[in-house]
Length: 455
Image (tube, rainbow, N blue to C red; front, side, top):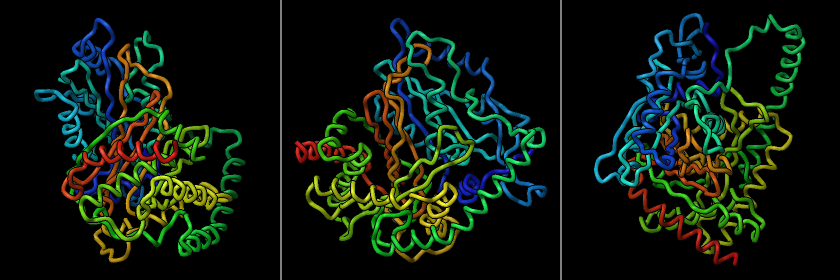
């Protein structure tokens, strides 16, 4: 049975091309339990492939047909082949993290096969220190970052002695849709949904006008008219480069407490200072401040089968010399942006966010874009588990996100918290963003500078 795909999800398929793979990924580092080796973990991995069926979400593939009037829908893959989706890799000597990141860069550059469910899982062996890694990628039409994080966490346990844990592809976050005709109160539910949707649509013009007005006045909202041109806002290729590093979360929290800022504000300030130094080294720092698009999760307590994300545009203050001044400006910009969303429904927030991002669709659809970029880069923060997690006794020591650069947005920074650390994942166009790993050193320098400025 074909299940219609939401417009928010299908846009990731409509805009995908060889230059614009539309999948997100995650790199996880594991240390085998005492007395075990990476080879023992491979045996468990092979057993999970052989014995654990994939859940509904991971057996469905995208499909268009005449019956759906050419629109994208989900359809179960009758010829599902787990061996295609779950693969094994080995690092070349000497098996350093450098080789691991290079492999993930290549894996993240390749398109997923649209004739099959849109995901892959890779077991990576050969790390010199005895650890092993997994790289998991899934199309953005299937999940957003929050849902992907929840799927991963459900395959892990905070108990190091727990065994028999299922792999991520066995997680049932959602089930096949229920026939609404079988539900006793379906008519009343549909009636309420219709009224709510009508109210949302009636309020859209006001939401658009308010958002555009804030953007024109230079206030933070879901749309910006002040982002300068930068080396990140150019056409890109399909090849990717990935760099990653973690820092203790307590260091960011201490800065936030002193500066009356959130941890996410501190993350943005670290990125702002690092980007300023990186661009100055390349003699490419714009005269106007960089603008970051910062996603805001719209997930409630219940998980969603689709993407549920809004966004605000944040002034990164890259024209300011002082780290404390940049942090202060970022805190004010984020507070203002969040206030701009108050009073809007989820549909309205998604609509104004789509409006703010719409200029990105022009080059992806083969149309020229001669105006300012809508923003300079995306910086996302996805919360993770505060406690250490294990898969069948192997401790996960690192969790690093990989995301999506697109035409006109050659760099993406995604961070996630895990077990007292904050992990930064930098995903860039291999050709357009030179010496990506240097940004890691600049992030470390900026964290020290923020500590000194708030001491």
